Length: 141
Image (cartoon, rainbow, N blue to C red; front, top):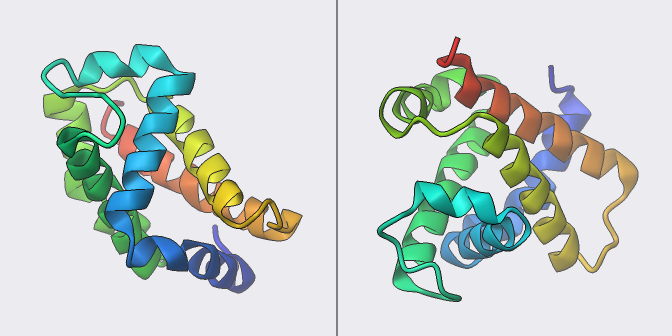
């Protein structure tokens, strides 16, 4: 459960992503594919090269979905319900990958904030992204 402080922290750290979804989303994915190359198997028909149109488009989808969740912190599950169904029923993404993406998002945001993210803000972001991962994995059970 996110506290009022957590919600404030998440909104603040996420603010740069809102107007730069394609840029941040592409960076989330490129970092994911670099650090966890096995995740590339879910994108067999994509051009996974740096700054490719496929990376930008998919990254933007991810960033925009997370932005919707940030905008609805009191109902993350409801906000991401359709996305949870899609991943479980059609895409069949191994839920472990949601945690991998979480790590890449945290590192990316920390890098863009000059490494000056305070521990409480990072903790709030981690709680939010863990909640997102739980929601996305919920339909697998």
